[in-house]
Length: 325
Ligand code: NAD
Ligand code: UDP
Ligand code: UDP
Image 1 (cartoon, helix red, strand yellow):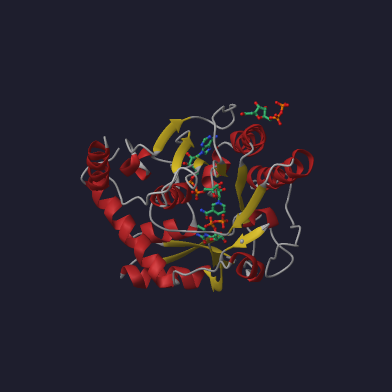
Image 2 (tube, helix red, strand yellow):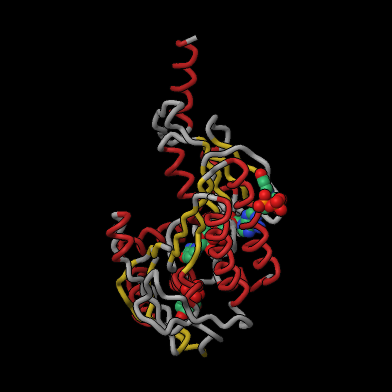
């Protein structure tokens, strides 16, 4: 039996990325909602390689099976096509709740669905966390600050959101999701964590995501004009709650020039009118995250951009070869 097990393990290690062995006591059953998306699929990789059992729940609105396909069939991995707006009954130890459209064009595409996902979807995941006694982490956003009047933004600032503007479905949806987390913590004793993520980019980001980095890279690679909206905000990449982001500040125009030069592109820079309710300036104050979590960004800006550029180039090549629909 032991020999058969060793055979199985070595077969697995050839077919899948390397996975650490964890004893049953240390191995957690982890649910990642939105796990087929950009951030969720990288989290899936990390938790799988750490040796945990990961269940990804996704409705594939913006996520893709391709982002997690390298785990399909692994005994520690499960992929469930499910919409978090519907109740979910499974047994888990931890929940990373990421399911939500994330970029402005995606969350504005169907504002009512964005609201349902962030309100009813989060309620369902908190109900699940309560029933099974799991800890839940909510992927929140810098957008809870709206167009901030305090700079840089820290955990104590309450924000400045237009409740009926075009971004409200997402901003207010995430604000109420945070409120629900703390209500379930106080009233029901559910262990919760909230991470307010700032604009993040990298491989597996959807090319038509519509955010600044994906737009500029795609435009630069295709020789199209880089669309800088003016006046455009000072831009920060990638904190609690905790604020997770890079405290380096750049203007959007600096970004456009940098991406253009990294791609070695002949694209022009085109100035477009400002979008409604676009936050003018954002920058996370990460002192608390650094002190309490030991967290700080480790990938330098240009390295991150170069990796994303490489990923996008490969995607375009695959598309040209009609390898993906
Ligand atoms: P993404 O669009 O790549 O991933 C979101 C995933 O959620 C997708 O796989 C999508 O199909 C899935 N999803 C959406 N609605 C769902 C539903 N009703 N039921 C089940 N699955 C659903 O976006 P991302 O950038 O990976 O964002 C992940 C999380 O992080 C989101 O909650 C987002 O709000 C948050 N966030 C991201 C950023 C960023 O810059 N990427 C910044 C702040 C916050
Ligand atoms: N829920 C779920 N999975 C579970 C437990 C609950 O999806 O394992 C949903 C359930 O449908 C409910 C929501 O979570 O609508 C909130 O659950 P809670 O127990 O707090 O509320 P109640 O069911 O008492 O209204
Ligand atoms: N932006 C831009 N051109 C684009 C896309 C975005 O100038 O093609 C600007 C946008 O107006 C905003 C900033 O870039 O000031 C970041 O916007 P993004 O849509 O990336 O994400 P957000 O941080 O608003 O979710």
